[in-house]
Length: 335
Image 1 (cartoon, rainbow, N blue to C red):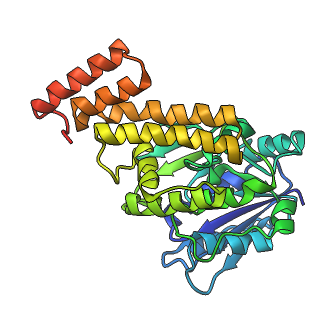
Image 2 (cartoon, rainbow, N blue to C red):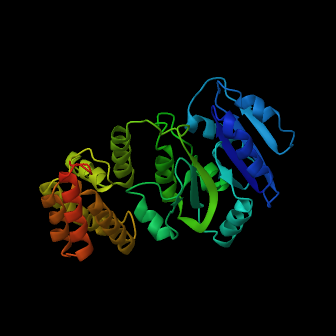
Image 3 (tube, one colour):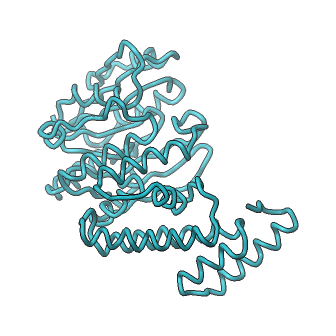
C-alpha cells in the first residue's frame, strides 16, 4: 500500500462527513484511511460507521488522550509507504494525494513535506509555508515549518527512528514539537499548491486558549531541542518578535530584540541549526513584520524600530503618524 491517511477524530461530527468524503474521492486511489476516534462524546463514531468504503478503518480509543495520542494510534496502525495527516474538520482538494506522492517520489531526500492552506469559515485567507528545505529549517526556531493538516511523511523514517508524539506534549503546538523531532533525520519542504481547505472557527483546538502561556512553553522547548542557548529575557523577546506580547513593546525592548536577533544569527554561524543565509532572511522577516504592531505602543517605540532598521520609509512614517492621531481620537487601541 502506498499511503495511509491518519485522521484523529474528537467531537467533529458536524464536519466529519465532508472531511472523510474529501479523502475517499481522491484521484490517487492506492490508500487507506485510518480514523481514530478519541472517545468522542458526540455522534462522530456513528458518522464514521455510516461509511461502507473498505478503505476506511476505524480505531476506537477507550479514553480521551488528546490529538497526539490519537495520532500515535493511527501511526502505529499505518501500513502505507507514506503517512498523510488529515484533520477531521478540513477538506482535502481532490488531487492532494496525487500531488504529494509525486513530490515525495521526485525528492527522495525529503523526510516529510506539505503544502499551503486555504482558510474558510470565520476567516478567509491563505496561509503560506516556506517551500525550500533551507527556509523550512530557518522557520523551525520560530514556528511550524510544515502544516500538519497538509503533511505527508515517509513511514520508514518514522519507524526506524521511533518518531511519535510525546505523551506529555500539550494539545496545542504538538505539530511544532513533532517537526523539531523529525528535522534532524532529513530535510522538510512544501509544495506551492493549496492542498487543504482549513476550517477556522470555535471548533479549533486553539480557540480560547492562553496563547502567551502556550507559546512560552513551546518556544522554550524549540530552543532547547535546537540546542540554542538562551536567557529567559531572550525567550520573552522572541515571543514579542512573533507578536505574542508577553512583554509590552518599548523602545528599550525593541533595541534588546534587535541585539538578540543579531546574537541569534551569530549563534547559528557557530551551531548551524539552520542555513545561515536562510536564517538571516527569516530573522529580518520577523523584524520587519513587527513594525506594524508598534505604533499603538507609542511614537518612540515605532521610531526606535525604524532607527535600528536604519531606514525611514515615508509609508512607515505616515502610518505611524496616522495611527498616533487616530489613537488620540479614540479610534484605535493605545498601548
